Image (cartoon, rainbow, N blue to C red):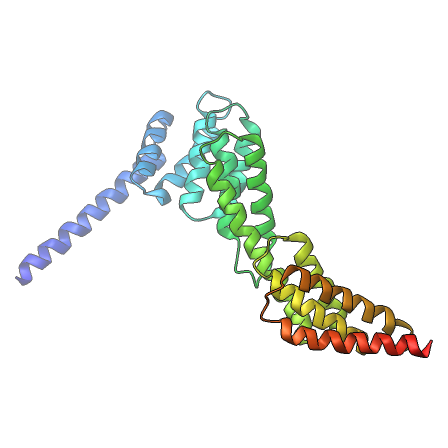
Length: 269
């Protein structure tokens, strides 16, 4: 048994050395077409780490020829398969600009957005790649409205926008918990304006009403009445939108307080 494993190990080692020697021969070969065939073969066999250096060299060797576009597309796709999504997006974009009429250009435009989508982080982090992905996918949708990937692009855009929506809501809630009520009111309004169908609409309008009232009570006398009126308006908008809300009882008490304070200003004047 021990000898059997020993011979098996030697066989595996020899096979690895042979494979390595074969790859070195491909790298050093002066035959450009042979290198291209091997690069495609490695790509199809999912040996992307081997294919990449070959396509990288072939970009120069085939420049200005009929195969230039095909080589460049393989090169971009190999970067994608190696999970270098930022570099892949760059090459897909360059491919689309360089070869606007190529059959693969439509897919290249989609891949630009998809690569940036894959780089989009959790909602709590910087959303630069989220914005890039949305813009790129929207451009694809505009350029190719009949594409079979249009549905996928729109689904990705919806997912990315949901991430921005959540980030905007969490930012507003952070201001609320930090008792920065003016910033909270502004931020809740941003969520409601930019995402009118947001799943956080009820919570946004509730916390906006509370924030508006607390902002008013902490204001100087010259601004207090106007801000009380604004908090009343916020409450009335909430009541119209959510007549059966779980927040209604609490807000009705708050509204009574707001109205009483507004009336006291009228009596004083």
